Image 1 (cartoon, rainbow, N blue to C red):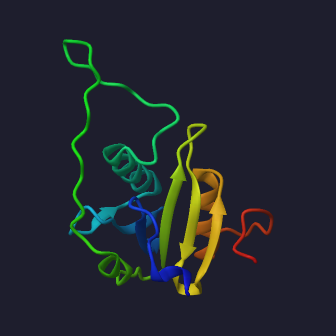
Image 2: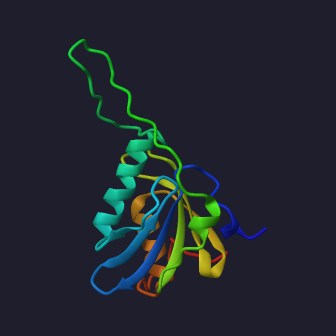
Amino acid sequence: MATQKYLGIPNAVVLCIDAYEDDLRGYQYNLYHTKADPFHSELEMLLKMEKLYDDLNFPFPGNNERYFNKKGTVLMKEKLEKVMKDDGLLEMHGDLGTFIVRVQHRQNSSWQGRITWVEEDKTVYFRSVWEMMKLIEEALGENKETEDPSWKE
């Protein structure tokens, strides 16, 4: 089975990259919103993804803020409801590239997981946000490094 035919986890994000000049620009999609969520920089993209993971409370962050009410009990967040199906998300594609990001852990103030480059049907594990971004840059032809990280098998 091809790796892009499924999302695999409830917090998967489909990144559709349309431009990469000084910064990445494009849209991200997830199961909890029916509309594309545009981003105009790498930082904006990452902050929106982090907010989704915080809203889902998945993956649970290794370091997190706690919110208390006046009685001192921890407040629970509202549960997000899925409004999209996997098939709908998998139909989305960017002009320059499409990536499915599956963050499995948020530890050491970073993310760990796997990323699939849809056009090439390749999946690679990443150990940090930095490594994930380098993989995206490499796929888009912007990262000239031949050392780790790499899409090579």
